[in-house]
Length: 88
Image 1 (cartoon, rainbow, N blue to C red):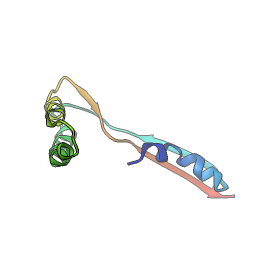
Image 2: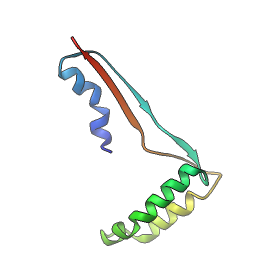
Image 3: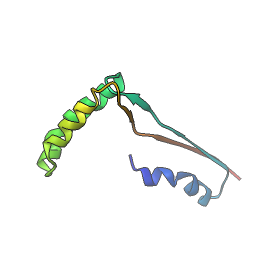
Image 4: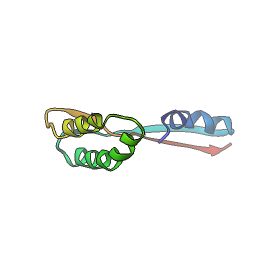
């Protein structure tokens, strides 16, 4: 879940001396009201109490969850970096 570390993964593999280093990125776009939107809404609901306790306004989470129900909006989920290399 660390976007900086993941983005640097191909460079890290090269620095280890691996050859034929390659990488791909997979991401997800989804419409509000879809199954992925429901997944994120439930996820935000589960962390709401903790984010409020940490000082974030609960309305931010509530507004985000409401937006995820809007089928005219598009959202992106987290991405995955896939990287590989082989010993030289």
